[in-house]
Image (cartoon, rainbow, N blue to C red):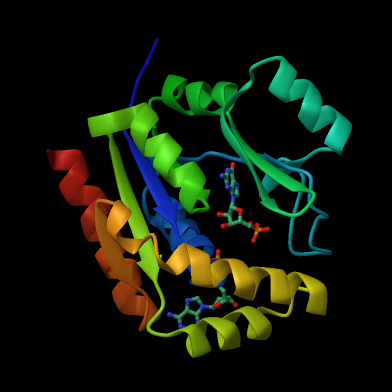
Length: 190
Ligand code: ADP
Ligand code: 5GP
């Protein structure tokens, strides 16, 4: 069984972790994205089943819990479940790649516990709550109800900053891309 390293990106929704993770996957062919399972609705044309998430019904998700198919899972927003699939991680390692996760803070802590020293956990921080709100609203993907749930949860998620290995302040995007590349390369050299 192959076993690579793991990079866990975590942050409140709207901080920019998906943007940073997508960049890393473009520039580094040795990384593979762990596609999570989720019961939330797919975002119109911007997302694809099997690429951004495996979009499952609640029943299918419950079935996976029973089969013990998840490394971790959380009910991130009321009625919306998200989880990391064991098989997904194994497939990436079997390809000889290192795995990259984009998860909320509790899942990130569980993944860090699970992978230990083989994992680097990176908290992506926004300079302020105002900027986070602007970014999340500007993305234009969320309903009013979903935005308010995300703002509410972001306050809670911001308090987790010190629980991870490093903080990446996402102010200027190009600088964040460089910083993220450096963090990955340095960790792989260790
Ligand atoms: P998350 O995955 O953490 O929810 P996203 O990557 O979707 O966040 O980013 C939220 C929005 O903010 C997107 O519209 C993205 O293009 C934008 N964004 C990300 N980083 C920056 C940045 N440094 N400056 C300005 N806008 C950004
Ligand atoms: P979104 O709906 O914006 O795609 O994701 C909402 C939140 O769920 C984000 O913080 C995202 O990182 C997180 N998330 C995505 N997949 C998983 C997962 O497998 N497990 C956990 N715990 N959180 C996840």
